[in-house]
Amino acid sequence: MDNTEISDRLSELADLLEIRGANPFRIRAYRNAVRTLRGLTRPLSAMVEDGEDLTELQGVGKDMASHIRELLDTGELELLEEVTAEVPRSLAQLVRLDGVGPKKARKLWKELEVTTVDELEVAIEDDRVTALEGFGPKSVEKMARAIRDHRKHQGRFLRTRAAELLAPLLEHMEGVEGIERLEVAGSFRRRAETVGDIDLLALAPPDRAPTIMEHFVSFPDVDRVEMSGETRGTVRLRAGLQVDLRILPESSYGAALHYFTGSKEHNVEIRKRARQQGLKVSEYGVFREEEDGDPVAGATEEEVFQAVGLPWIEPVLREDRGEIRAADEGTLPSLVTLEDIRGDLHMHTTWSDGKDSIADMARACRDRGYAYMSISDHSRAVTVARGLTPERLQEQWEAIEEARSEVEEIRILRSSEVDILGDGTLDFPDEVLAELDLVLVAVHSHFGLDQATQTKRILRALEHPMVDILVHPTGRLLNRREPYPVDVEALLEAALEHDVAVELNANPRRLDLHDRHLFRARELGLRVSVATDAHRTSQLDYMGSGLEQARRGWLEAGHVVNAMTPDAFETWRTRRDHRS
DNA sequence: GCCGTTTTCGGCCCGACTGTTTTCAGTCG
Image (tube, rainbow, N blue to C red; front, side, top):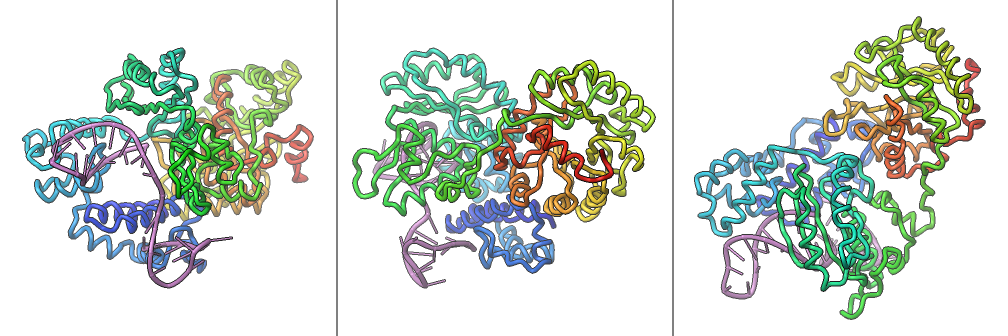
């Protein structure tokens, strides 16, 4: 049983316990533990095998550790069986509906025997739900909508997609009288790979709030207004994206910006810290606990952090991954930026499945100020992408020669995205690999192998002495394909051992590695290549989203292969004697 | 159920909005 399954079971258990009416703090304890487990890079099975003490993990105590061991040993959990004997499993789906929480789910179940989304739909049609105490026509209508939404679009929006949808709304709000500042907070500001909704904050005098709110909900792309109060309004756009607007006075704008930027876990830690100092933090400001007087801070984020004795922390770091301690100790990372980037090491051309020529790509890289780049078309096994045979690869080298003389200002490396075959061997023989300036390796097939076999397969590829970079290491496609089952921790450790770099694929649909794996890579001291995998010149701009992700993983320029100066990069590239 | 600069018991973040309530529960972020 892998970490995801274990987390899912415990999370389900939390939902069901909540519906059963358990102590809320017990529920929270389960959810805290789940959060820790989802952040692990190492399989729990491996940790247990190595005799590690699971209670060392944040939020995991004696009981949780024994639940985990039970799931690993038997694939089942007695407590979950016991709870599901009483509370139907499908109720956990019901509480995912907007407007349905544990209390309502329980009532629907106990009084109407509704336990699934489908049954709820029927019960609403039969007009049985309005008969319940606490369920008026409005809340029933809300549930009906939630069911439709649930069917239409599950999952979150890619950050880039949300940005596209948001741009016209921001334009709509521009120049509205009274708005002094307008910013996006939430996971969007933290540069998360996907966002569930958008939090907009407007700084404006309170007497302007009604007209601002009115203007907000009148945006043409609004499908419906979910709520609209004095300081807070929520709309859903036609594309399904929910947008919240909060209107704030100057005195609490910074506190609100901090609060609504989150993450929730970061906020909880900040509040705990504040309490220890006799302070209370809310979205309205920082207050002394005893008196209910004026706030100590609130107008700016800097003030809020300062009030609890911390320097300002970048939003990308606010995930409760140790940023508060680092801030306290003055060891916050100096995060990598686009200015640090000197090259792009993964891209395709018309020679395989790319849309632009080698020279076009070279000019586009040069125009971005890069000093080096690598042409890395697919190898022959990836037939759907017109992968190159050794013969065509040789022809391509002639074309690269031509491009080199045509675009002299940039160093063009000949590379390849060499397929890792089913058994972990590489798609080109060693004598071909030896002629390449840079060898990238990747998995494009056999996603269905079990975790142990998949891990072994990739480890074998990493052991090959000519491999430089493992690209898109987990194969995930956001909202479309889960990562293949693989022990990422083992991959990272092997990459370190064999002096192989790992890629952070910057394509916004991939962002592979995940930020928590990048964080681990940093801890281990691995080198990371942030690369676009561009299939046309315009996609070279993916570097931006890759760097957002890199920053979320705490990466500094020193961790990034393609932030090296040309000389340093040459030294790294030729670190093994078989290459010159 | 977890945790400890309040340390083995007694806490555990805080407030807005809605709906169906006649004073507040439920949900959400």
